Length: 141
Image 1 (cartoon, rainbow, N blue to C red):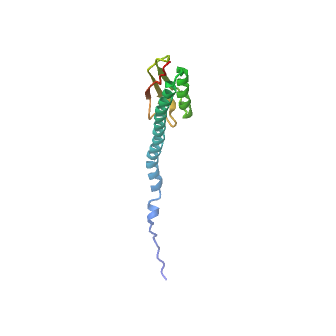
Image 2: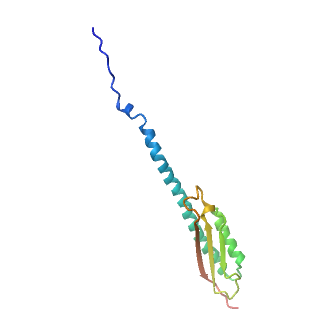
Image 3: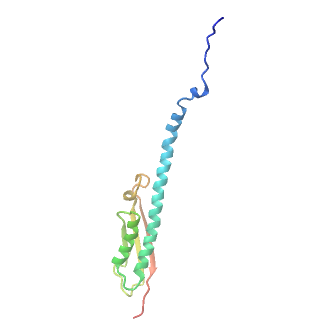
């Protein structure tokens, strides 16, 4: 009996032994970038919508008779604090609300560098702002 040496042929999976690792190394950074960017822009969207709501609610607080600028600013800051916005600027025009004040304007600006969750690189040095103007409820005296 004659013995033949067998040369085993490598299977297909042995040829692709490191393919998954290489593909993961190429694709994973892009996937992570997209996920973190989506989180960051969702935060931006939440801040902008909360700012619009805070402007409106604060202006509503200011149009009622007897309201003060401190009431308006407190209302806006309370809403902004609920979403974790820091270093926001609330400006109320006019500086003093009287019975003859025809309208109230509330402006809010938020620096995104201080309000980023993941990294501030996506919105570097960007400040977003919103305003709302409402006519006051003037009661005749």
